[in-house]
Image 1 (cartoon, one colour):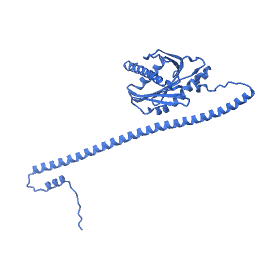
Image 2 (image 1 turned 90 degrees about the vertical axis):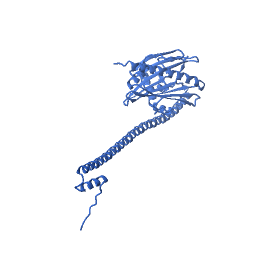
Image 3 (image 1 turned 180 degrees about the vertical axis):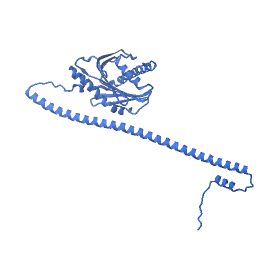
Image 4 (image 1 turned 90 degrees about the horizontal axis):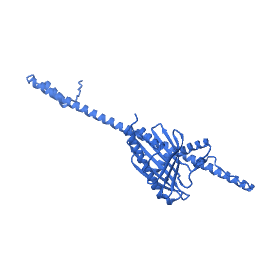
Length: 351
């Protein structure tokens, strides 16, 4: 029984075999040249095939790397929003619990007031935690605890404010203005801004804090005074800022606190207080009810993303236009000084 084996040859291999089988009378040099030429073609085709395979593999590696980077970005993004959602839920639950506590407290006080009224005795009620009404007590320990509590409360709601302003994920120049009417007839005015700054993280952070700690010289239309009342600790200050306008004189009594986070994020929170038992506010001035948040995020070695948000509470909507004008002037003036200080540190680095 005879078995046959089928072997497939390429065109070049078949021609080489034919030449090798050829007549011995043929020119041996011509045969060698022909065989060499066919072998060279085969080698070239093989190299071309290998080159194409390598190119395809490199493209596959590149595609996989892009998918991997995209997956990591999406994972980080999801993680960020998941964290924000948890904080928002926690804040909402705290607000609900606080609301229930206050409702019960009101009921208890009304009941007690009725008893006192029936007995003909008068009492004055005083809140245990005056800081929640933005009031600083005379007692030093209570006073310092209140300053930290006021700043920390605003720090916890910063991301929620940035979400409402639409700047939480912005990394380029943008500005936002929101107006929220209140049941009392007043209005909450929110201002927000975001930009990318071409400077290292450390320089931006130092320039921002230095701007607050020292007496700045903003180019304002009307006279102003800026002064440090007390250094609470290395990260917390108590300041006074007055601004004399044609319409009225403004007074900002500010608690300022900075926060360093491990993921190269730096935050400054400022909050005005409305009463101070030790250094009373000037009742002849408009006492401003204002909060601001400043956030610095490291985007790369030499760039940061800067986000800013502020909230101003006005009792009268008729002053809305004037308030917006003044706040924008303040924001632009301080932004100009801030950029000048960054440029100064970039041009004259501390060795």
